[in-house]
Amino acid sequence: MSQHQPVGVIGAGAWGTALAQMLASDGTPVLLWARKAEQVAELNAQRSNATYLPQVTLAPSITATADLSDLAGLTTILVVCPAQVMAQVLSGLPDGPRDLVLCAKGIEAGSGRLMAQVAKDCLPSAQIAVLSGPTFAREVAQGLPTAVTLACSGGEEQWQRLSPVIARAAFRPYYSPDVIGAEIGGAVKNVLAIACGVVEGLGLGENARAALIARGYAEMLRFGVARGARAETLSGLCGLGDLVLTCASTASRNYSLGRALGMGQSVAQALDGKASVAEGAHTAPVLAELAARDGLAMPIVDAVCRLLSGEAPAAKVVSALLARPLKAELGAGGGSIA
Image (cartoon, rainbow, N blue to C red):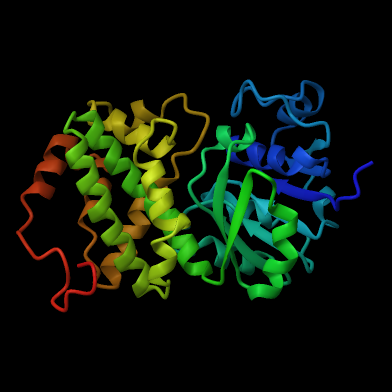
């Protein structure tokens, strides 16, 4: 029998299921919450998640439930539900002292809250951490080598408590105290991945995509630093690392959405029939609004918003970006990305 303390995972999409599988790889009991009773039945009886993570047989120590109160007594819970429903989901979990590890990437529409603030408002007794980095769910579920940032609001004390719970032989977390930076990196990269997909869909080539990643990173850095993030956090796994991964593969839902838009599909057509959420589509407008409120230039983010709103087709949006005034790459002092 396993001597490990049980861990909770809220959300049985591809990423939540993959994290549950990773945690259970050493026999740790994992309680996986899914919203739909029929999905719970499939997870428990068939040991599979055919909709979100097909061809993966779930570890025997994973148990699914549709009752959030079953997780109430757990001291560590990973929250992997989509960003836009996190407040609604967490409102069903009794408050209590525990480590709440946020694994969803986004900014709440309407309020502009990052996920750490959403979670703290819902469950004030919890200590918040953020897990973010370059991860594709299928590779994590298969046990392929992965490195992530684990940003802890409780500092090194929380890290010492959490890292042994989360780390596995092929899943390596790196400590950061910068929760804001980890959150902003994960949220902004989703929007930039849509833009990179558009470049692919339009057939503009690898040079254009590399340029967009570099200039997109400049926007991420500009926004993050203005919001209190550390520049070194955004240059690490949860910023630049995640950006590079997500902006170069159709395994990314956001990149796939942008690619479809670049190939001429409407937003409705591109999203039709997709089980998983392309979080960047929800994050883009609120990110653009926050940047405008702070007086920050984020032209790539603005371009994605125009495309998603139907204001202009992909080719026109990209042409407008290319027509922007010429300028120095670095700031006047030469030490910051402009």
